[in-house]
Image 1 (cartoon, rainbow, N blue to C red):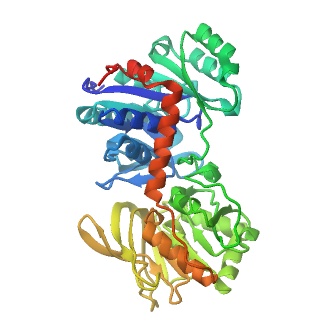
Image 2: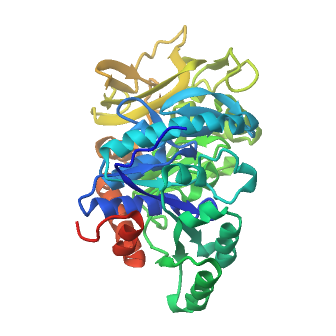
Image 3: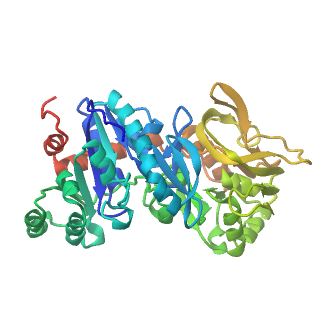
Length: 515
């Protein structure tokens, strides 16, 4: 096994379950330590997510690590998430190692692969340790899953290998917090329990003094102190990586429909990916954003966007089975605007071919036929950032846009194509210019491979005001999304620091109290 660099200090945030709050607390700790002048890096040895992001060098990592890197004020690198699993079916995943596709593996095959994967984990950890003062690590799921303990890299396996102290987070809002924390400790080995330096209770509502008897019980039963109780912080919407929880994802303003609001809808695909694309739209006060799973959900929509998906053909069939495909065609025939991102873009074209069976059995299916493009799925994955502008036909005036591509398909104009209008032109990736996407002649259908395009305030504002003009509404200003994200990080870090105290945290990490 690789030796571990001792240059950087570290701490690992684990949880009693998924969705306990590990990702956001990791981000908060990154910001708390960065505020004290420390060079901080996030690190998640193994992540399973269909929401991913592209680093400057073209590596693919979990979206949560991108958010944590923002909180840490550091450049995102593939080493911050050396093993990323992107589910492709019920029992298989695409395995990404240090930002690049390694292979597709069944669950049992990956279980056998974990011993080899640990070498990549420690290699990435050591590179980070050479350039940062503190590495704030995030676990995955629960460390007490006894069926997954052998060759574990997600939780205690990595904590033991790196000698990292551990804090365990539990979500009291779900109930059963004391049983969860005690049960987790009972299922750990003696060596693992020795690494646990504190508990954090997350999402508490009410009078915190009512917890005192329970906290005393925890201390007596486990010998571990509770570092703090974090209240339910209102107004925070932080990325949720689970596609099953799309309603909770993103930076969200809770609002009621206004007379001058637009309605934007996105089908809740079973294999939806990168739904964080829609965070900026959800944040707009004058947009009512909905995920839909029935034809009726399209009623009154100003814009329908087909999202990214890990299995385009299967999700296209799902839309047909639900009757949503027919509803989309009717909506389009009545002049409704339809957009598509990545897999959604592929669905808008004439055909999708999978000659090598990358998404299942080899097949070729018809798309919606709204734009004359054809897609062929291919084993080589495109992962790159891009900066450019909206092409002619999409908006009245060109607007700068930046984003990133993650796809295994190649989409080209159909044989009879006469449209020839790219959705985005002048895109620059790796110093090379190219165009992307397509727009219908009437400008009402557009598709692109560019994720993150709505993060660009100018483009988002131009599209919103185009929709408002179609409705006869006045022009509206849009949210400064970067400022909104930064305000969320500041509020999150302040709430966590107030609850747990920076001195306790620095003592656990082994940092001097005064820097």
